[in-house]
Length: 127
Image: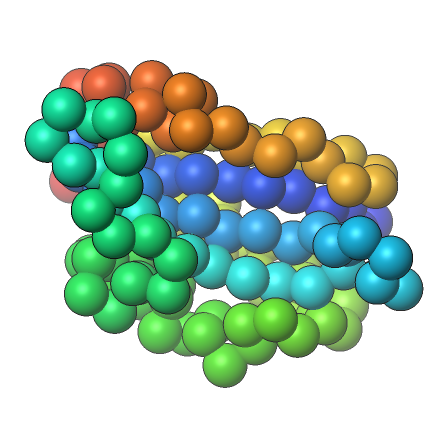
């Protein structure tokens, strides 16, 4: 599988967003894996919580993904791990509304207004 870098954000609820990233930060020599979660305040002008709040904020398939991949947080993934993570990411895409930016090198960051727009969608219901 060809590697690519990405930022992805998944709408868990109307207030909670789960993020999965695999990208090269600054002058680092290679990409690394990370997850995070954020919870909007009531008027959605800021976040109540943001960053490493996955254990508290995530549920369902997103929490399963987080629990499985948390041990690789801020680590490089080998080819097998990368392919498995991408397959698991596809499961998230089936369960949640999402936005994603992919690139061969340093994908565009997901902006606050884009996450806010994502949070305004009707929550996806999957059986």
